[in-house]
Length: 409
Image (cartoon, one colour):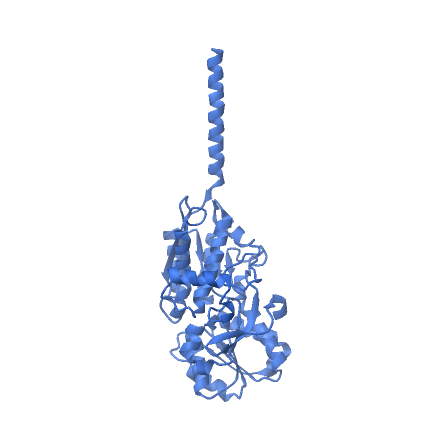
């Protein structure tokens, strides 16, 4: 009897140990809506139609990158289900689609939604629902506000910092400039304009001689450009999305106006803006870069660029390599993949945000070597460095040092 009891006791201990071990393993896996042992649902809206449809190559590149990830086995054994809907670059439409993503598709996180107005419209809802709104495709300062919106994070340098860097350069190179400002009448345009004025400081009142705002619903902006030229300005700032940026470049050229021309990075794409506007009109335009330019020969033998080219060949063979928006989508998707990988088996929305807010020295293929992605719980700005560039021929040419947040202020 004693032996029998002893056998039962040993077996019971072994069974208990196995149950405890299994329980411990199960306890390590934590899921919120949108995550399982085999799948991670990520939601997105993009401008597949509407006034900014040229930028639809961003979510298309994101989808292609996740297809690549899935073909290679997924992230920690899970396939990415990237669900992307058309929002036509319209805030009301985006609100409708994001609600569908969260309440219908039950995605784990929303990623890569485009536009300041669009992201402003969905920001409060996603924060109330405590759903990560990660790496929004917009540089408004408001998307680096972890105290008030802890579930929202941008990716690129803020518009204010970018504009301040332009101002610093202008004050050095042309301190007596007469400036005309062409800006979008929304938070993004105003953010750029405010950054420019802050960068110019007290000189803003005398240097800025004219400004014209426009609505994205306008069919053409030619009349605004005619007014700005008539002001006598010799320096021009264009803070506009691609469609209107291209129109402005062409109209300035057709008028024979030759100001020192600054174009915001939001429209610094060779294939999407400079080429359709006309390279003959784009020569010398100044902008700023925080990504590698596929058209720049300096990156020809760069390991990251070679990976990008392999990606295009396999997953976007018909894509326009000169389209900077593809590189943007590729880089942000790589960043999102890094966050998901670091989250491991704890795929709760809270842990996704924790990982996003604690990125350290993450490198992605399309960001220049040495520029690393870092965040902290009090600073939600993953990329905070820029380098000035100008159009030369049919490509951008980088010049000057890499400038960070401190240098831009």
